[in-house]
Image (cartoon, rainbow, N blue to C red; front, side, top):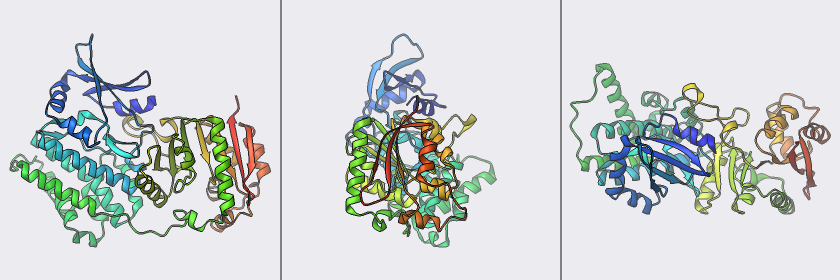
Length: 457
């Protein structure tokens, strides 16, 4: 988790972030003292905590350092994630959380100073504000700047995902400060002009920004907004975000479990084998790669094992998150991830955001029904896959599915290359160069095999 602290501390001028005895700590600098004190004395912190909008903070006096006056400790997420890895509803829930928090802040004479998505992380299955330093004494200029940033970071991607294509959320990888509103206007279809909220907060807003840039002046003559106007703007934003919905999509893999050739007996047998493997390893953190809607991820998360369920399919991740949200599941985090092009190190000097391969290290990785996609569809070698998986964790649960399986046959119809080496004997030979096989079992009613492996010493 040390990488997480580095990610979050980058360019954080108000408080140094670090880990001590496994806890996430922050030094509160003297330059933040006034805003930080007001955050508590105004009653805002208590209100946010009561509504579970923010994590509980424990603070102690910071002795021996004249540049700092407090040290605070709070919970760290079991996996630090970025907005381009979130599903539509994860981004939408985070967007609504930030508006609700800003409403409370304004009522207490304060404002949010940054609308970056990274200020929010998922704890116990739902978004919470991760940075208490974003709350400062109210300032009109800060409030306007945050409104503009919010529209770029949250409203623009949500609108593009809802009206155009859900995959456009990936533009946040390129536009790390939020998707420009003029670009958003170009991509949105004409029907978006019928949505009054988008007209106000995207189209007209983009026009105002353009006019301001042409004049090359700041909006200093703009009338100062009173608290009622600010509340109306926040209400309008909230209604606009709530009105945006996940687009209807027909997707084979998002509906995988409805059309699978698995029998009930096979499902039960597979779950039993995986449960046994988890009991042997006793992991604290699990990655499930190619998790689909998380059917097998939940074998781990239901055991109170922190589980990150990765999938490339936006529909599957959306359904997984909504299921977890409805069931109030606290130990599973569904995320988007393309394993053939994983999230890279990003930002200035590639040091602001840590990529997928470096961000964390689970105790165990599950790769169920993943091999056919990597080897057959993406033309990777068993050697490539084995080397990749061993960098992630010490233990591996992996499933081999033969050619005669119905799902593999369907996949082969989409492939242009021949794969003569895709067989279990070749798979075993390659993987045993990098792993010791601890267990292997054939799944009842199928010709699939589940392996429990450990990286060779």
